[in-house]
Image (cartoon, rainbow, N blue to C red; front, side, top):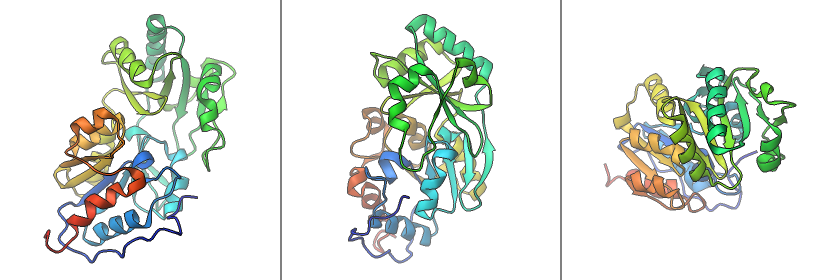
Length: 294
């Protein structure tokens, strides 16, 4: 379960002040969560103070709902969450999936065939739709990446498909791609050149290259959530660390990259803060909550 570490010194929550944003959007891994999977008391207090001052907090993560909800429950998070790179809008308090966008499976199979014709054999996995959507891996993906996912906290263990047809047997929100001998950035660039504008290709973490419905990003999911809350991009400050966060940071009025973020994220951010293990979110929010700022 993900909680604030008991030995955090923390700071007392700030009193409600004139806070310049109505929405604070945070990525999860590498941004809100520390390396040990916890959120510090200082960061929690800064977010609580921002909410007391009238702002909403939305988690926007590449993880699907099935891989996110136990973390949100552990944090005591009750609001909306953008999951699956924007494909799923989830109400954490009600444990309810509000909206979902799936990847066309026939198109995905066609794109995979084109990618393999150009790039050689790929390792594949698919993320099924729904509250309990499993991750299904082919044998190559299991051998190359599978160990990373097994036994990771409360995450459900992925299943290995007896053959590739199983990857496309049920509605999916995205596919994972892996290529031996290519970094995630190299694979993503090569895949985009082959796939063109048929699907979206994004890097979401180490060894994580994802195929998504064209045009789907965290920004599209966040804009949908924002409309439900009656707020706009101009009201938003967003935090992230990986290339899949770039559309969200560009959509927001103020985009903040974590100190150890991918170089492409730092290049587009309005500000670079400290890392996720050094209360980077709190360091940005706290000055905005001081009386002199208002």
